[in-house]
Length: 272
Image (cartoon, rainbow, N blue to C red; front, side, top):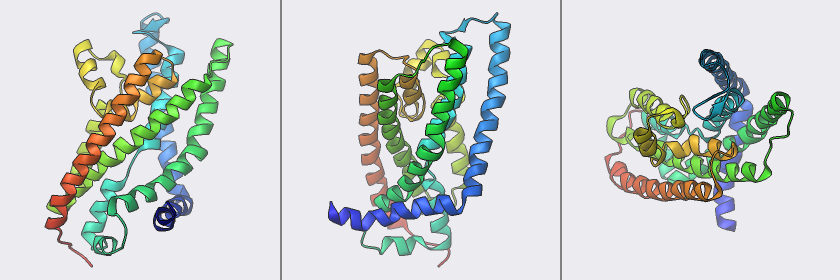
């Protein structure tokens, strides 16, 4: 444990420092997400108004607001930029310096991003959840916050982050073959946003499609933590959903290791 702390904590500190130094970039990232949420709010408000108010497929308008903002917040919390980072290091040749360091390559990326994730949790996620709970109290006149659901949300979000990181790591290793990931990255983000339920709740999908998507790893990255926080799952279903997340995290970890074995043999850099 002491060895791990000495080797990888500096990477975590570097991730925190990067977010602090480039805080305007982070601020722009947050504001862009909030603008998107408000656009989606007015879109869904029109849907609920046209349906005569009340509930729509089990969601009230208050539920929808909570889902929209919390889904976007969770997506930003578990977001991993390791795909782009690996792609850039392949292009400029700096990947060679990372590979010769006496540390595990993917762990160095992981701890670097964990620093940023911690800052997002403290600076953005927790204040957002507080604001959403104030909104729910204003709309319903009741304190809707459930501490157990919040704790389970954090557990689920942690599993979601590991899935997100490993999926993005797998895509990042593609750079060892194609050298430039810009197009692949845009395609990946578009597909993952749809399949994870961050654009449209999976509960609104046709039954067969929803069932399939709920068992795929992408739903574990946003939809599952949010639905747990909202109390949409029973205790047994919550345990099952978190179990599915853990299984996917382990499976994709193994996949990333397999891809790494082949990818590192293909390494050739364009810079350096």
